[in-house]
Image (cartoon, rainbow, N blue to C red; front, side):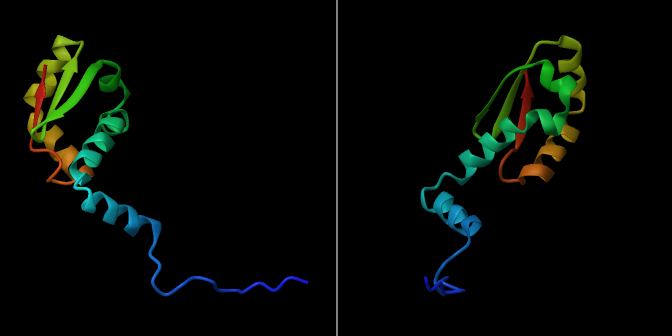
Length: 103
């Protein structure tokens, strides 16, 4: 008959979430991780119609560059640029994105 301890967790253990946050901070890759999260979530945040007309997304100096295949959509998004920035900052934090350029 095997003997099992009910609680084998040590007092100095941490949760996976906090360990992952510590790892990102320690290697100074938290910003890069947030940028990759934003790019991966573009379809969910902006919607399928915009995502289907997006050719390429990339970051440079906290600026998101969005290459679009539709000139009318590019013009419309350019006019509502502040709203797009607000949505992305609310979702991913103000430190992640400062500006958006639609190309």
